[in-house]
Length: 101
Figure (tube, rainbow, N blue to C red):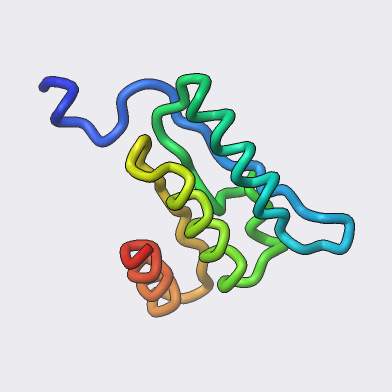
């Protein structure tokens, strides 16, 4: 197996989703976080996992986070979204939404 056969090579990191004092997602700080990780050698980004505070976000907000991260990565690193759902149907719908992003 060579490097081209793998999705991830090197260090991957989970996003720590930043929030404003009002409890909204801080997309500017999120962009800065992702840029910092990419500039310092992170080669894959994981969104909406436990460290990403997904329990504090609606599904819509989680997808907004994923969109912001994909926009910043612009193909520099794969973005992998955690599927969090309480049913198979909702999980499949979330996976489809990630694919569209």
